[in-house]
Length: 603
Image (cartoon, rainbow, N blue to C red; front, side, top):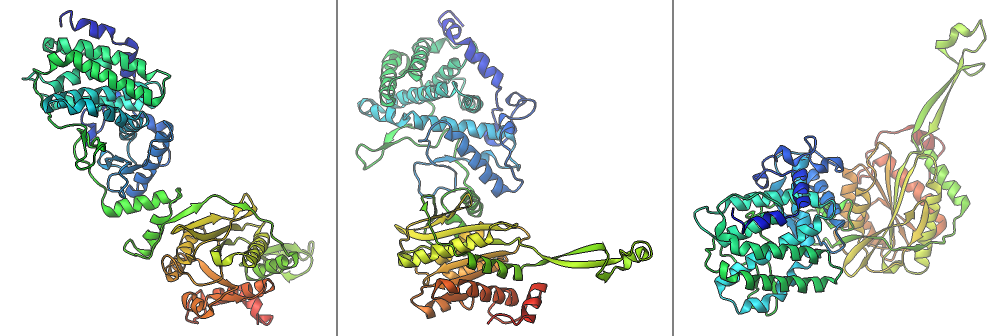
């Protein structure tokens, strides 16, 4: 290289070059799914191996875990990153960042080197949105309108590369810049493979400018690009100054657009004679929409591979477990073609509850659950009286402690969930009655080894809401409103019950039939499939026959608060004897039922 190119390489920050070299480089074919080189790892592992622990060998679960981790990492950049999805998951959300799942296909759990690369691609796109790169393009529209088409393509290549450099300069100041550097090196390698060595092109010019900015070593014999590279390298320095500026975001966008126009005027004479390989516009106004433009999200990496439909649905259901939108879970249960399903979401806004708890009824409820609880046999040996212990007969002439006594201790380890109808018809005295009922059951179930949960459901603006009524062992409340979405709410409550060996019981309290969302039978069938005993209490009902038609014989009607213990007793006996089915084939009996029936049973 002659003296014209020399100053460009010398003025490149040596710290930037050292930083990039210490981070390592990914394989040029990494974007095509191959393994990255050793330079992209630390002690043979990618950087993400040191913080990403939630992994799975199952493809759908792993893709969901990885997407959740990517969303969390990108969230550190700012609040306006937007939705992040795999290709094939998008539901008409044009503002989402769509990732190519083929980048991580092949091995599960996904290797940390691939995770590093995907995260680098993601944070680069995210920072471009945070820094309003689209606004820079919009500010340049008027300038672009008066240009010839070929000049417009050349200018847009300079702007696109400049925005890439600017975004990476911002990322380089934080830890996420380590991942962006790896993705950048892969992109550089892919772009280099598309160039032609027998022509002097604008494509190679911007590629050289991009590589020079980040301290890459350049081959000799590039004198044809000398006149254009000097002002472009000066543009890099000014972009760095803008990236550290304290000006407002819109002002920085204005500064960048001005810098690109100024740089184009300086390099125009040197660039116009060059050939153009890729003649696709990066930014163009949408046809038929005045003033509305877009920048295609498809990059030079090629066409994205979409997730198969069944995998995308499984990923969405996995993500819904920890998100506010529960609709994918409901659809995975009732079917994706069910037109009755309405959107469902969690509700996190509640108010303090001040119910009246009757201690006598609490004691009665505890007695009922002790009666129906399974028993653990506890044997006390070495006693002076009781039943003769055959294993201790040798003690008879010695100490006389050859007796034993068996105790049947109730196992209070129920897995219980209360589901309360909070629709508009439950306002006033009905809701007060329900609050007292929930508080009484809550008080009765506390202690021992019980797992207790309580939810309320209602509808707002066509969306079914589910609210948690227990916050750190305290009872909260919500204002009743909307229609009744019992079917979907039963599914949601049953879905989130812990799956362990404890007996699971779901108590549903409502004042009427379901009139929105999927049919109640879907919820009943789901509870039956999961081994959950579903019991329904009709409180202050209006249409008894309609509720009987929906819930069958698994419902008990209440007219007053004092009927709650007896209603629960009847429902529990019916559930334990008949197993929650409509036929009356008795299930296997246990000690508690034998004792209950021997005492006369319930009326």
